[in-house]
Length: 510
Length: 123
Image (cartoon, rainbow over all chains, first blue to last red; front, side, top):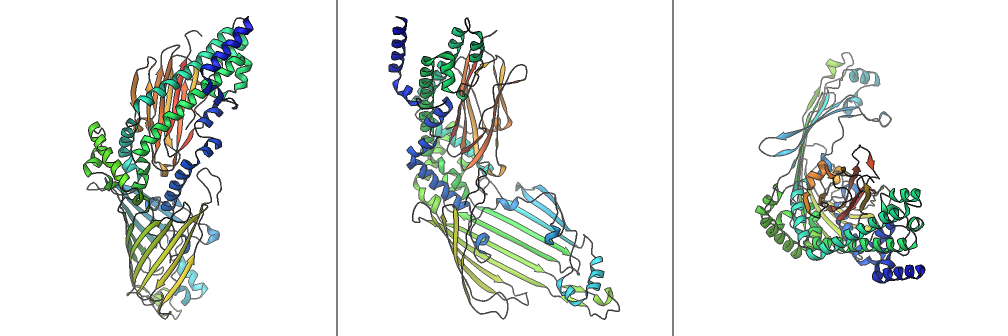
């Protein structure tokens, strides 16, 4: 009679929750079952291949956008208009030591971040580099023998070649591409998006999951209670299970019997299934709100980077040099354009009003819906201006090396100005990966340089990503060679190959 | 979807400690938030991104009770966050194990469900 009752009770249990009991039947542990049912396992990923493919495609587009091409991969003649200036601010530590084997000098570097007046922010950096082993200018080493070169070199100290660099990244409510600048807006919009999920269904799923875990705990409490009179050690062992998902179903069968194991499998399946559905609903709401594109919009924000450099040198090392560069990038479909300016201000504040957040979230969602393709594939523009002025340096060799019979040397001054305009856009390529097109035109004004001449350089670069490799193919046209006496017109083609040595997880990838 | 943080036999007056930080400061493209239910089912104040980054604690006072909630990590771009989630007993020792794996990446949203059960007094 007792056996019949047990069979009936197990049968009733299985019939009551058949769908969940089947779902964990093949899993070794609750953790395995959770991972599989929630989509973390390979099996589940295969089942939802379409969605995974779409996500992978979006990631690849993002990777391609973020990947520098052109100049970094194909030499200086291939230029890209899509770069992230943030790494330019990541200067090295306070002291750098050169590799003597490589012939590098030791440099003493002092960095100082400081707050700019007038609300311009803490985005400026001043760096001073003292070259501890300055070298004689090459015209001097060409003019003297080794012994006199050593004599002149001994005169140099670490104060004879000093470089001061000032850099500034323009950031504001809608300027710059640092995510930190937009974190509050993202948090406010995400909170609103989650409210737009089917609240009743989400609540019901949450409650079902909580109840399932509560039943798992109750099952173990009851199991220990039943075991304690006859087998206190086994009861203690059951009480010692503090993380039920890290145990195996086998152990539950051994400790509490097959009926408990079956029930455990069913309850875990129920908890995992309801959790997966709940998270799926919330993720869908986030996607419907356009927030899966937020990061891309931040990458399209305008950014301006300025550097100015002053190099003070002893005439034996060379002429003093003043140089600088201003670079600006912008894409039309950016976060700034996604909402009115009052939304940006309100959402970036500490406690935006709920009504305002809701209204701004609607504007944001509508913008993303209308501009979905342009966010990833829209036009991007860049402008850069670069200059360098080197002053004349007079080296009194007749005074420094009396009796050597050498005449004084004069290193001539020089100057250059480079103007650069760039445009880039992604196009749908064969397969799922886009092709990026970069068009860059430079004009080099080097009228102050006696050995160079002005010239126009235009480059067209196609970058295709294939199985993790970025392959830039570029054509460069210049109306003159760089140096006087070179050929008049230059047309060259470049093919590059770029790959990440280490993926995010630290595993090497092609 | 992340594994849940399911812990039982927690001594009353133990404290849940939560802190999340970026795996890589240069790729801090996420925001965290958390919702919690008290033992009576009532909703406790939400924790914001700033609060969670600073570190939060939650005392589980009621014996033989259950507490639920979840921690959300919303990733705007491909990045990873390190979650430090643990329970500290009244005597200062750690109950069970910390949340693992502690490194979670996205997008999309990753939600860590919290299911915490205290043991009865004297048990």
